Image 1 (cartoon, one colour):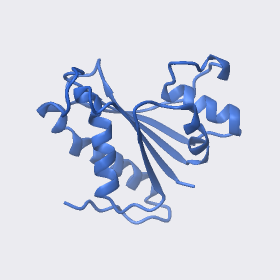
Image 2 (cartoon, rainbow, N blue to C red):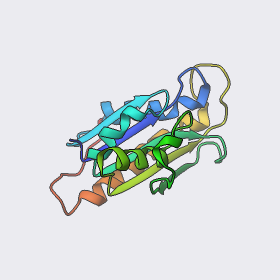
Image 3 (cartoon, rainbow, N blue to C red):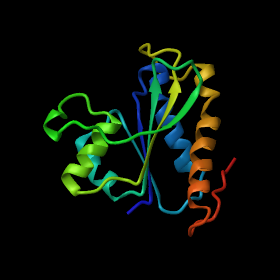
Image 4 (tube, rainbow, N blue to C red):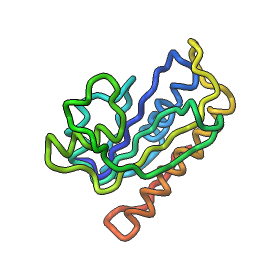
Length: 162
């Protein structure tokens, strides 16, 4: 069981849509944080509900088409009020929280989205310079939250490997 679950969604062939995948890679390669699980996928899937139900904290990372390019938005979220049978093609973080609750009887005590404003979702590989420059801030935001949350608990402060 991961106390902190990070779920990153994006498409590496759609420009800045890959920013969440880059953030996930940075977290996996450059951190020393116990009990944190990082998963990256092209989209959110119903199968993720089990891992979500077992986490104390879940952070969903994605690119945003509406936020200013390169901006980092970290916001708390609550489960959707929709019933599980409405979860068909458009599975979003709130719906996955509700699905975890419906299927497993529990969802994380703390859930957040971290969205990075995208500049382009064109069919191409690689991030724009603006979005690429926001990755350190996004990683810092996640690790700072986890450090603050667990500061009175059992974990040491994470360190980044440069």
